[in-house]
Image: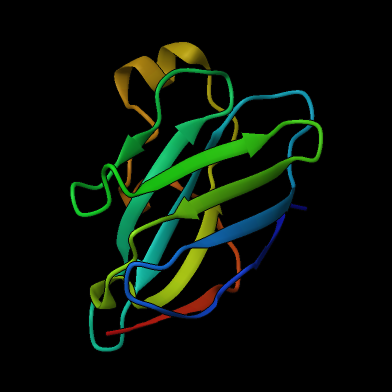
Length: 132
């Protein structure tokens, strides 16, 4: 059973930084997509960043490019989101997500991007609040 547990959220002033973590119990012998999403009150869930555990360049939403970095520790099977130069509009609940196993061919056709339909399993979320 896939389980995802996020941590690291909190309150920070604008231009500050936070690092989110997602401890994952997932497939140990397969590769898959992992990503971060966020949802602000009254708004739809938005994809922030995604990567393929088998390698390749991560994909970011335009709104976070140059400020956020997604990474993964394969030994700990933990996904991270380093968030720098935070803005009030970054406020929201941040979710970690993972897909079912994918081959490299499948990912070449449909990259691990920031579309929610790419992902099958979701964590409970961690709140990020950025004040001006």
